[in-house]
Length: 296
Ligand code: SAM
Image (cartoon, rainbow, N blue to C red; front, side, top):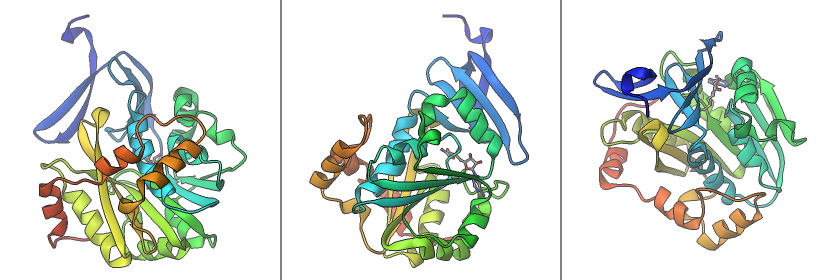
């Protein structure tokens, strides 16, 4: 193994005093789109990685942990044939996971950045694995904010696979009361809105708690769940919101039946994983119970 100084490094900065450095074996692409900086790299441990604005979005080695968690707990809780909307999801892996369900009638994906989608098709084809060519996929390059305001269709599941709502991100305008109303108006009565919802390590759970607090007035059930994602070097959280169903309490037999119905095999998610995803540590439950800032 070559020595440390042999490599160039991609360093993800979590805080002014916290870094994780990945050795770079190859840089496939590094540039800027009108919306964000983009890098596609390969590292020895995680394989290919997509990095937007300096944040790791997913890695070849463990993207299934993130994408199976984002998609399947919500999808397992809805009945029958489903129409699904993905906001963001540039790599196409969320689309892939949704379309593994043969009962999905149509999946619409709206990503603002056509260059990220094209770079993902070119350098990361394993992520979408043919999903962009599936006749049930409708891929729209555009702002999800505009789409959600103009669209009049109904969805069984709406998935937010957007970049984190930091003030300089194009996803920031999608986190406010108006948009929560618009999304709710697009959901069928038992529908589920599920979001990727930032980190929940003891040292960095403030943004997640703010997201959960902001959604609580709008849905009867707002459930946080999380798992460790090694490429993110963080515990990563999601939020499932619904008036009609409680995604945390889906019957294990139903989950196993759902997983068996998918095309191909899961790598991460099943009924046992589901239990672990929704079992939150005490410090996080305490944080979620506190009052605090909200997205207004
Ligand atoms: N796994 C992720 C993470 O760690 O943050 C999110 C994955 S996905 C690559 C995020 C996508 O959200 C990007 O492709 C970006 O272009 C898209 N996006 C950001 N703001 C958007 C907006 N307003 N409308 C539609 N897509 C948006």
